[in-house]
Length: 185
Image 1 (spheres, rainbow, N blue to C red):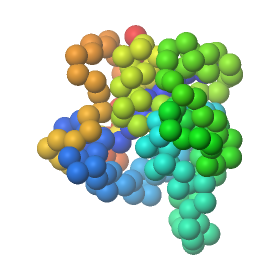
Image 2 (cartoon, rainbow, N blue to C red; image 1 turned 180 degrees about the vertical axis):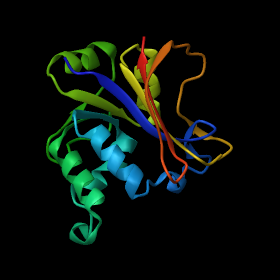
Image 3 (cartoon, helix red, strand yellow; image 1 turned 90 degrees about the vertical axis):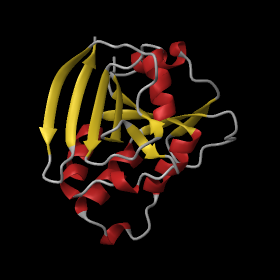
Image 4 (cartoon, rainbow, N blue to C red; image 1 turned 45 degrees about the vertical axis):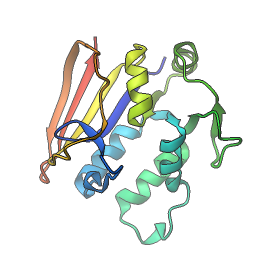
């Protein structure tokens, strides 16, 4: 059975995007990007909502890929090689290979996806991630904490949820990013 990871880059004050929806402050440098690639390599399936899928499908065919750094090309290959499940009521058909559309995000469906294989799953996007946490589906929380305060926006964690966590790993990067990895107890 695969584990479900909620892995996200956040600001110090706990947001995945600022009040205007911007997240340019979260773009990883090569060191962090290489680390993210290693985090993502065991992921067999990405779970997305419609907006996150629309953002991430860039990786299916990035323009000028052959001229990009090796870490960028590596991430594109990782993303292309994984399955994607998009939870959307409006998307009629997949826009990328290895993608299927499901209409509802619910505990039974996600638990079935976890039990269906040995590869890990990753829930992408703060909205879906918060839902997965509330439903008790997340096995690990992986946070890349950026050295910036954005003052508001899209929160990383849901309000009113209490979780007991066990620290599994931590790492500091030269650009000030800090990685924290927790098991949900």
